Image (cartoon, rainbow, N blue to C red; front, side):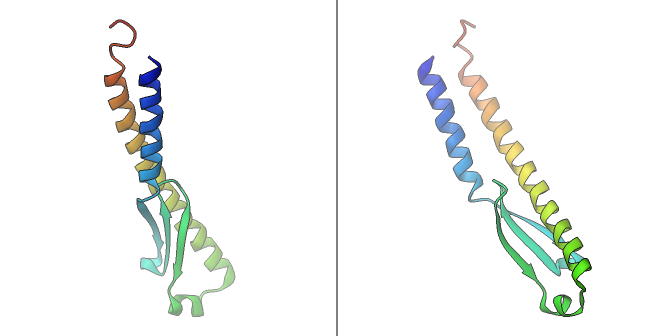
Length: 101
């Protein structure tokens, strides 16, 4: 039983490492602002189009930046949930005999 639990922990660690390599994006205003993050919800980049930056006021920029960040975080959550769900399904299959079933 302990071996199966250790294997499950190792699998979870592998998925977390893989999520660090998956990039997700949040864009607004047709790509005028683009936020890049990992599927582990770490923001790795923010790109603001020079023309948009010149013409936007502070309040507009802040609102759109928040929207782009939230879109990226939503995508990260969806990818993370999909990966963890697949891992859980796989783990449950391998734990089938653990409780005498």
